[in-house]
Length: 292
Image (cartoon, rainbow, N blue to C red):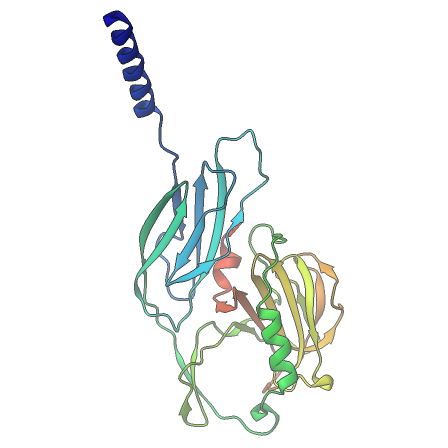
């Protein structure tokens, strides 16, 4: 009897030691870029061992969509996911706390969002340039900015949509007719391309918005909106010609229109805005590095 008891105790001890030796499910989180600044898109890359449920990523009590990275292989021990967190000049610089949950664990990760200088312009608007937006264009553009497609269509870094020099950078603050626009910042990059010069798709995606000045796009002018997937969207404004229609799929660098001065514009130029989950982010990092 004593031998049986001793055997059972030894077996239980062995099981306990095996349980202790068995590694806990590993929730790993990587944040890119390492030193984000206002206007950057923050990538949260999560590695989990739980293949049955996706992790969650939360910032300032808002949950952000999480998508699998690469092709999922059930033979692999872990799965990788990514969430994209937009920041803008309207954010407060300082510590951000990103909460990630997965593998039955939760991690709070502190990220320091660096301040950044944005120049201020004084603009006087008269005539056509002072027009107010129609409800039609406001509604259609707002609906476009809400798109979050599960598929990812872009590959590697984005391309310049026009060869002209940059005339106005991202994030510029403005006084309009002497009054400071409190919640305004320049939501994109302007290229001073000549009238009729080519406008290229910055990355692959589906055309989900085509708006024309003649149809009520009084401020945006002739407009193209491209869905690059996973909440990443490009909008190109003030075009002269539009060569695509809604539903078309375009490749990076494909000519989709020409530069113009339609809508509330003071001269020929292309405005390229890049949106991540409805927030206008700086497009330049997307051109200079792979957010893939």
